[in-house]
Amino acid sequence: MQLDELLAREAIRKTLATYNAAGDRLKAERFLSVFTDDAIFESEGVPEDELFRYVGKSEIAQWMHRWQHQTNDTTIPTHQASFVRHHLSTCDIELTLADQARVRTYWSAWTDIGPDHAGYYLDEFRKVGEHWLIAHRRVRLDWRSDRSLFGGAILRTQARAT
Image (cartoon, rainbow, N blue to C red):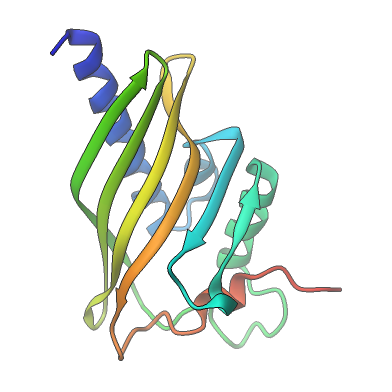
């Protein structure tokens, strides 16, 4: 393995960690910093009413804003958890070109109840300047606890007709 490959892998792992830490803490600017301007962010393997697809940083920013601020009834929080911690485990990085990679990473989310939900990310990364950024993220859900504190959260982050 060459030094440039090792550096790329570590930069990708750093981007993955930044995504989760910023997302868990609802730090929008930091969260958005991991995406390319034309990024696609979507879900798979979830019930049809929880599917989402956002194209470009602007749409992703609007989605993040809805996590931060309820758009309709402000008395109903987006989710019931007092904390969220996404943990990453197996991470398979395949450098496909000098500036592109495919990555599959397992994740689990912990909340007040312990393990809350889990799945994996299927990502396409692109090197932009010195940074490896997410160009396409598919979030796949494999499991959700019957006691999940995220029930309905995705529905509450969907864009609403005005």
